[in-house]
Image 1 (cartoon, rainbow, N blue to C red):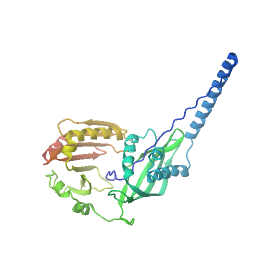
Image 2 (tube, rainbow, N blue to C red):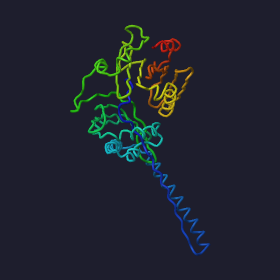
Image 3 (cartoon, rainbow, N blue to C red):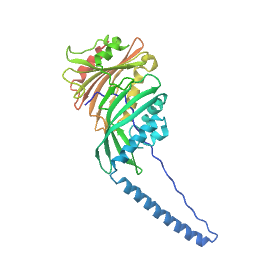
Image 4 (cartoon, rainbow, N blue to C red):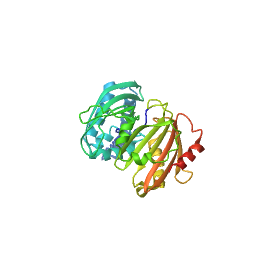
Length: 338
């Protein structure tokens, strides 16, 4: 499993509803009644025929080219900043439908050059298709942006007779590219060394056992930074525990600990489909467990949000595919961070 990074573009769908009304009139009341009944029967027959044809269409295993066309249309709409056309490629019951519309709307400040390649239908049936893909995203114009090559998987399902994107798994790989599309070879330590906020983050008193954890990924942008630590004997392709530090300059004034926790619960509720149990037991702390989600692995987390010099810090310990056996011990560790 790879470290979860939300750097790529989320995908969402839109459903169109069609309503047909028919009526006939006649000067002869009797004939009008008969005509109305006949019309109703005809409409019922047409409706049944239509429903039957849509059902048949939904129950057909799609051609690979038809599935690829959905992804191409999705990317073309995004490139042209056509939000309505973009949403028409997203399944109406997608768990990320509402939040994705907002995210895509925010991306309108960019002009991006994007290209799909190496599309492969991993599996497909009458009800669902899984497609792996690679995608390059290059900034043409707009604010700071990391050019990248993304490797991931889309899940498509039929929606009112048309195949649309139901969900997109978190990218398995995100490769940074320079302005010429060449791969940027950079380690987490290199990125951290160049970071504006890295000294602030590393100045915290972290309750790590010496030599047990190491910095695996560091990213920062305007107004935020994230550092992810893995156990030294695990890597991005196979890990079971993750310790994360989020840093938000002036975050206490802008949002505050309570506001962050409320936002976290709302986002998890909207963006997950599994069994979610979220708790905010004591001030500044929250924990949650997630199981049987369509996309995410089973996981448990305990976290603390606190302010320091008007800045906001979020420290999170997460386990994947296993329970947190020493939760009280981790709560004590998180409390000790200063």
